[in-house]
Length: 491
Image (cartoon, rainbow, N blue to C red; front, side):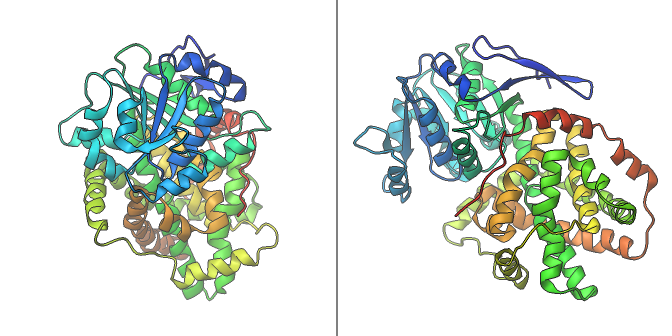
């Protein structure tokens, strides 16, 4: 994939990652003065939808464009229950910043489509028909492209089609932007893509959009690569794998080793969302291993060796299911079912109830459990290796496999719980986690933990490959472009 580009508005720089070169743009509030040039010819940006990304992106865009002639207007279904929430955020009919979805689409020069993936599939023909000739369609996920590919269709030839995809959930996009009002560079990294450019303005518009939502670091991908890595990632290390491997490890510690329930929860879930995530965020994956004592390193090596290949097997299957369109079709079908048969919640099981007690009783940072560390790092490294094998650029690999996990999703799961995240995320992610978490659970339980508990020795070749992996140097470079502050979570 070609990741080199030039901009006539924003300063670009070329970074070298493991022998490959990528062009990036560094965002920040000091770039907001360039936004009118990036959005030249755009009088209104219509933000359609008020789910996870909608509130965050709309408010960030509005704040970044304050003092310009560019209006940000929310478009929602007539009678939508989200109307009240949008009004609370300052978007109102009286001010001309809130209206009916298709009316806003028809009058906007740029339409940022942030309704659910299933709703996009159900409504895209009507949306395309409503848009102005020569307008720009903005997507924050390549899901719609994946669907169009699967049915042999494409975007209308009279529209610019771009993507700006924050590598974090909507609340993180907004919270870090707000924190960054005092600290330049606080935000969530974004990838961008230019799928179709009909007037030569699409690239600058995409970069402007990314900077306006607060991205400290903007890198290039394609919508095709984006939806493959994104749908794959949320089913694996970002959510599904955390859900599955946590349950496998917790059950083993409690039922097979007789550990207390709270102690087991701390050794598994609290470890992943707490010290492991913080260490990886600031110092890289290899630091998890380097920080252990000799006995801990030996434990890590054995668990890593036992877990890597069972994890890789599931990851390969997930990626193939995403690439083939099967996962996209399953989301579309589920969207049609859920009107009558909504998904239930997972948060009622004893494990997640114990988690509520643990979070209420926290006092200090737990000690890293080397078994959990070896397992979690094995899954993360297996995902990294698979995405590299499939041709994704290293910025995308790092953001989808590491940065989004440890800087956005895991802190929320630490604050509210893994079960809360599963029960309240997007339909696409929620469906994926509920489908694939049990597969991780069973493969880890039936293969990795069996081998580990039977005393399997560390695989020296596999461990050495981990220690010498190029991703450690890549992350060290990319880490210089992480958010300038850690996300602060409060009620």
